[in-house]
Image (cartoon, rainbow, N blue to C red; front, side):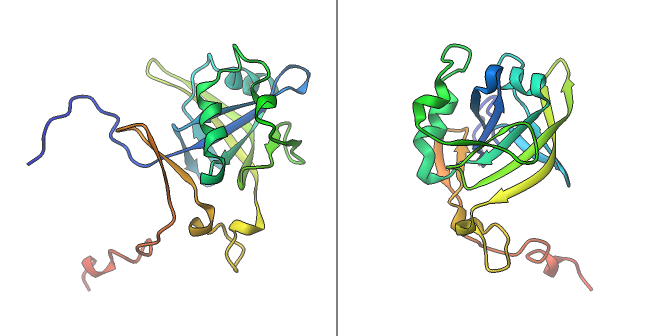
Length: 190
């Protein structure tokens, strides 16, 4: 029997995404965003408020990158979520991490995170309920260490962080338990 929990953000897992953009004088700003998702074959949607320094930079520069945080960089990924660029202008510099300019968009690529989507601003969707920044994915790059022999990102090698909204924990992904578009075929009938 289920127990009523009230209003709970009961979606698990949530990604731990590092969203980066340039600000004034090409200053790198990065934020941790769990509320993001792929919304079409070449688009990513980030549900981030207008008040974030990173959001302001995205709107100004019309470009950003989205990286997947991993276990090895959890401390800095979390720092990017608890420190605000609005109050801490040297937020990125404090980490000692390395940013290089994307060759595809006007945004920084954070070298330490293993997978990055380089995006141009496609649209901003504002309603009474949410503010959404939609990026057109221009390129995705990944460290060779997280690729399969076929050249695709291997989740077992990625060690991607997952955010738990129930108890505010970080977890990692990796164990493959089935094949998509195959595990349910037995229920299709003949």
